[in-house]
Image (cartoon, rainbow, N blue to C red; front, top):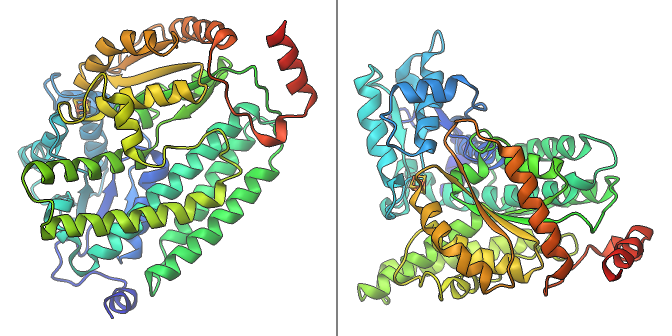
Length: 449
Ligand code: SF4
């Protein structure tokens, strides 16, 4: 009944605070932001991902921050102001969508900061939309359930697209073909997600069909796999790791220098936040509360949806499997940052670094904004992680918008990765289509010689 109403109206009621406004979704990751905007459109909202940042973004953001905030906040402020300063923009018709959190870092301050800054600059009418699970996503009114389920499917689908792109692009036969296919696939996923389906099952069926088509198109793309490319795992602060402007296109540059990248995805962070909620409830003696029941149900449906989508790619992701459960990652982190005593992305980053080593990666890079405590804590621990994991090279790359000799640093790091590759104890599972090719035999001869 509820779903029918949302489908039929396709517009939020006039009394809703978002009625008549355009919702802009920050571009943390281009794929996920576009897909979340599509889900918002499916609820009847006018929504779009914020366009890619450019040199004006940090410049504008820098004018309205003190320099002590995190780099992602500076970029977000800059991107928001660019939208508001566009000629003809009425601030009363603008809403910004922002994720929020209660963790130990400055991220939880972004929303209060924006809510203070924008009125100070004369943009009183702007709405900051910060749906949180603590408030039951009440910002979306009766469409909250649709939003939660759809947003999760959007995240899982775009994680899959990103993984397909990164395992394909370094080996493409025609330059630019993987990027082009990725863009077309993302557009197709967004077109699928923006439809208002009558039921959740219908939405799932449509997304699966769309992803099957995407999968077959990626399988058909001409590539030439080469096992001599070092495989580099990339962990780090979620915004800087995924936002290509903020990290100066580090992933693409690693590929240009001859590497393949395995990037930590967004869903892993959601699993960590869910698991953390259970740990907190346990500490507060709420393990058998209504809140706990709700969290278990959400986990159940998220797991089910993730399995339904990721299982379509079982063959494609051989050798790139993500852990079945986030607790696998937390167990790897336990000797360094016990999850009951430490909190935040640093725990996931350290645990995932060990996981990457065991999956046969040749090195791990941690991307963080300058002064981010997650990066700083990780950097202090990585030498021990490396020592205890057969010497795998691990390096932090910090970003704050200033120039550094990135290419020199990448070159040095990849030399270390190549030399580790020759003696590493964990072998990497290679794609099935490659194993009997001439290149495979040449690579095997080279490593045995
Ligand atoms: S993770 Fe780091 S960069 Fe991100 S909000 Fe927290 S302190 Fe800032």
